Amino acid sequence: MRLGLISDVHANVLALEAVLRELKRRGAETILCLGDVVGYGPSPNETLELLRRERVMCLLGAADEQVAFAFARPRRPRAGVADETLEWTRSVIHPEHVAFLRQLPVQLRLQTPLGRLRACHGTLGQGERISLHQDAAALTRLLAAQRCQLLAVGNSHVPFYHALQAGWVINPGSVGLSLNGEPGADYALLSFSERGLEVVMDKVDYDVAAVAFDIVAWGLPKAVAEAVQRGKMTEKLPGRF
View 1 (cartoon, rainbow, N blue to C red):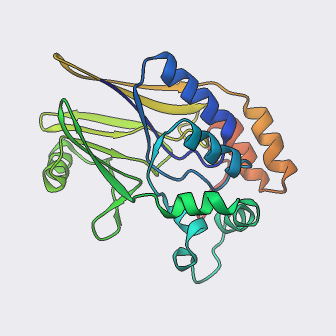
View 2: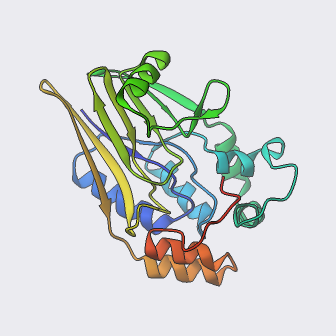
């Protein structure tokens, strides 16, 4: 069994096309997206059409929720680029895609050959954001609390994984707005066999200049275009999702 994990596509359809193509080439039988399909990027409708056409399992991320549900939107304006990009997304997204976002689950449980996988965008339980950057003892307690052997989380835009005696914690990074210092589309590939689990964390190239051009052409913040091209924010941008 081979499972592809992706997250934080952020309306970047060129990045999504590249990463889906690579995962198929590497034999992924199922692909799970951990949320934040829209926001920041210039192609929300095209991105959602592709995800639906390819039957990618998707979770609801914070940006998706704020586009799909009025009650989830911030009560006060925030500094930074998030509110601006969300407002633009709401003005262009097709009603059928809003309906699709509204029926997405916020978390998912899957049974794998290694045991139970639990997945979410960035929060579980009472809404507290999950941090995977903890020591092994804390991560082991986290797995036990969630009653799973695999925990997959998005949101940070930075790839990370840790193998523990009790299981694995994985963040596949971001397809559409990777922030680990190198441009490209992040993904993880989980291969299950009789020998156990092999996790491959990788990044695929795509035309970042074309995406940056589209971001600016649609009047979206230039800082987002620069981040796509550089793989990092050139300045601290409050108001992230």
